[in-house]
Length: 206
Image (tube, rainbow, N blue to C red):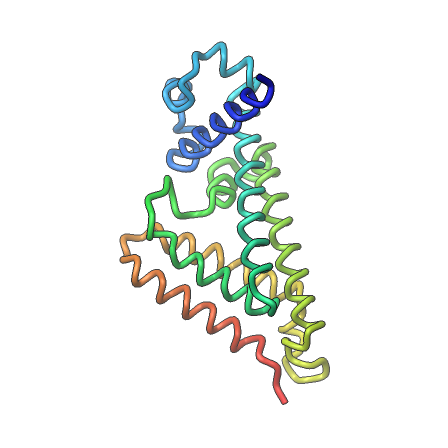
């Protein structure tokens, strides 16, 4: 029985995630949550405490899922830089299957709630965590000799932390662009172009 309860809770979080991702925090009403979770208001509050706390759990779940996807992609390529390029290319498939939204839920939360909100701060922490993982991947690429050597004129532009910020902007921009009424093919082409740009930017010069 405890195992089934955990499974049901995760399912409820997934349903809430889809709702919040599609409508946003404020637009998702208690009535919407009742329908999405198939729970009465009392059961929702008993399980999650409040709408705000439920949203916090949803953000944490979304962040974990995103990190799992990133790690899986990086692990599948022996080249750290190749893995980062693969991750961009994979995002080109955002419009291949239906989903509640294409833009990043964490970014949407920051834009909607503002920096002082507790859940917006959580969203920022999760984004910081992803950027830190990008930095680690670029550092691994440097160790593998995949980045420009130190001492060249533009070496500072290829420092892992700086590259990670630029890379995260690519990811955010690609996901936001996917919200526009463009074709799946066009999005794949854009993702491929960004991946090629990344490889060209980081190419080791001789």
